[in-house]
Length: 207
Image 1 (cartoon, helix red, strand yellow):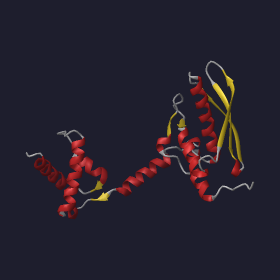
Image 2 (image 1 turned 60 degrees about the vertical axis):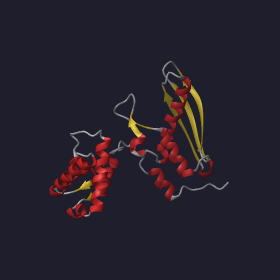
Image 3 (image 1 turned 90 degrees about the vertical axis):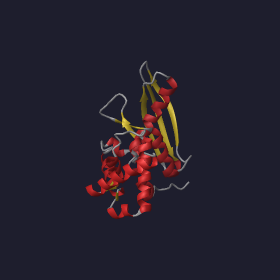
Image 4 (image 1 turned 30 degrees about the vertical axis):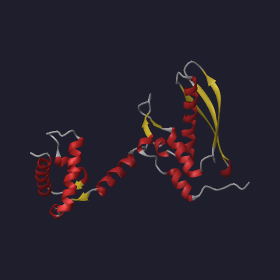
């Protein structure tokens, strides 16, 4: 059988940072991060295909506190073969075995490049910068000309009204803060929008 080589595109996908929700604080070691194994599984399926890789596990040690397994990981088409040990201290023996397997799988994933930023201690840092930059880039500019357009202004007011309703109709609802989460606007435009919204709200509520 011809052994395939990992393509440049596949390697880029393997090396791509995991989403922020894939990483959480370690349940017992606050100075460490933990990767949710399902994201490793998902990445392996995307890169190599469902069923192209396989895992075998063997329990090699067990005491009152810990189950240790030896995990063998293979992707035959690519000639990839790894062995790794994982452990888990769940009181349920079945869950402990599964947890030990996923512990080993996340480590094996890092050898392929999956979640390497977590093991390097960089998890969250690039993502935070990217998220901040993306949020800033996604903000639209709200100008007086936009408010002068009755159709566009009406849509904006209706959008803000929806936020107010979802917040439970509070008297303390901060229109300015809500607006600036999605739009860039100078003080005069913000002030005018707040006034327009108050009139719009009163008109819709009949008072």
